[in-house]
Amino acid sequence: MKMALDKTLIVGNWKMNLNVHEASLYLHQLSHLVTAHRDVEVVLAPTLLALQSLSLQVNHRQFKLAAQNFYWRDSGAFTGEVSATQLKGVVQYALVGHSERRHIFHESDKDTRSKVQAAIRNDIVPILCVGETATERADNETADVIHDQLLGGLANITSEEFTNIVIAYEPVWAIGTGQNAGPTDVTAAVAAIRSQIKHLYGAAAAEAVRVLYGGSVTADSAADYLTLLGIDGLLVGGASLDAHGFSEIIKKAHHKSMLVGAERGGKA
Ligand code: PEP
Image (cartoon, rainbow, N blue to C red; front, side):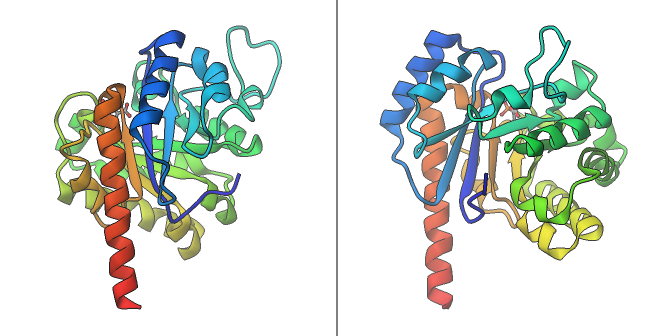
């Protein structure tokens, strides 16, 4: 799948919330609140159980779907697991290395690396999540943590593949806590991400990769992040569960794109 690089990407991670019926009602409600904009790509990550039915219900021009998780092998004796091969055609994106996977389910960098490769192999865009814990932040280790998670998650990727990879900077201490990361911290982390990718894979890869911010984003704070240098969109957890609030975030992304477009038009 070729990504639309000039679009602002807004991803809603519903985590382990909403059953199949509730997910369908939510999609119905959101589809009436949101106009499909050419400059914004909206991705929904519902429970795995609802992906199949939502993929039949969804207007694919309006919303794309993402898996919250999957196993990296394509098939075989792995009871209870779902592979990227099985998700192919149902989802366009998949979260990889979300902090809840890393910290609650002890997923390693090797796991995230295998998943990034499995996603790409199956034509699914991986959204690789990276970010430091509160302790790592207090110890001034943010850049080192990002470095290790990128190195661990992206080994064996070719520079051409960065057009189909998304990195989400999600400071662990900001996820689900209501504690927003400040603009200086986010800008510095995003610069560190691009600089590391440039160092490892070259300038074209660093420019092509899309970088999101995630961590307690709400309709009120969305615009502050969307206007930061190097940010291509948002990964939204809690605030994506309310269709009205999430539609406001999508509207902010559209307004941001219009402003940027007008600025570029003015300079031309
Ligand atoms: C997330 O789940 O990736 C996330 C950023 O959650 P929240 O917006 O609730 O902090």
